[in-house]
Amino acid sequence: MSRSWSVSWPLTVIMFFEFLMGLTDVYIAGKVSKEIQATYGFVIQLYFVLIVIANALTVGTVSVVSRLFASRNQNDLTQAIFSSLTATAGAGIVLVAGGFFFSPEIIHFVNIPEELKYLAVPFIKIYSVGLFFHYLLINSNGVLRSCDRVKESLKTQALVCALNIGLNFFFVFYTPLGYRGIATATASSVLIGSLVNLWKVRSLMTGERTFSVGTVRKMMTIGWPIGMLQVLWQLSSMVLFLILSALPERRVEILAALTTGLRIESVIYLPVFGFNMANAVIVGNLLGEKRKEDALRSGFITAAIGVVVVTIIVIAVILNARWIASFLSHNEIVVRESMKYIYISMISEPFMAWGIILGGGLNGAGDTRSVLIRVALSVWLVRIPLSYIFVVFFGFGPASVWWSMNISQFVQAFLMSKRYFDRKWLSLEK
Image (tube, rainbow, N blue to C red; front, side, top):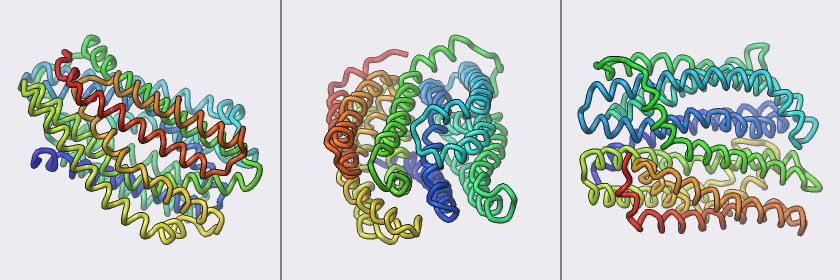
């Protein structure tokens, strides 16, 4: 239990910093206008789609590097770290160009309200410029936590968070950038954070720095299902925005409420993804030490601790729902709909935590395909179809979408538990 907690708490704090940055974005967007808040909600989903390659490579990096670090093979460890960072940089350059030059075409074809489209293009272009540095920041954080340097990663994220929040207020309210300052603050902070992390990672590469296509291929083999999963997940969020855009009235307010609700809900994700990443490192290290039963037990314990933490947070969020929603928006309709989202979504949060944290253990073992299949099934065969049917065919309101999201979380937790406890992943070879 102590090992799970010692790795999990710094990652949970890191996720808290991510939450603060996102919360600040939503708060400032709401201060500007409900249109900017709704636009930000859509654009940030698209931005997360663009960083999936970095996340996929990082999942593979953690799985490979955590085992090499535990085995104390310094030359192979250096090669793996160098190869991962190089591949990540290359992918970042390609995605920067794609996001910057094709953003107008992307926005032109999506079915968001017309009054939001002209606002979205500058957002996407600025975010795209910061992609390269965000790629390096994500991957180098993965390297640090795999090599028992999670507190160094924590320090970097604290710096990024402070810069992001401070620059957000400065750029938006005190420069001609206006609402575009939200994206500019993100790009600037990840640039500085990535440079700091690269300096820290240098000390871990004491062997010969060579690029290995085979190592990158291994990382991508492990990581591509998680990359695909994140694409499908973010696309599902975008599809939900489009489904809600089909509502006959108050579309902008509902979209702003979804943006606000997701950010409020993201406070629950802080410990969840902290424990998820911790579980990947713990399980990967233990399997590298050939301690399979300890890996199984530690993964279960980490998930149980995470569920307890999440349940406590859920209670706190429910009790303070109106105050939190009112803090993020001054529009009464947005506040009211945000509260409905919170009250409904909180029901499934402990189940969501259980499934995602167990999935982190499976990721650490390299069993990423099973995680992809189970999450994809719960989202694309349950959440999206139910939401579409409820809104388009039956004409139900946005609450029907929130309940569809709950049902998919129950299904996901069940499928992930079934896979984890069948123990087949303990025998996977990488």
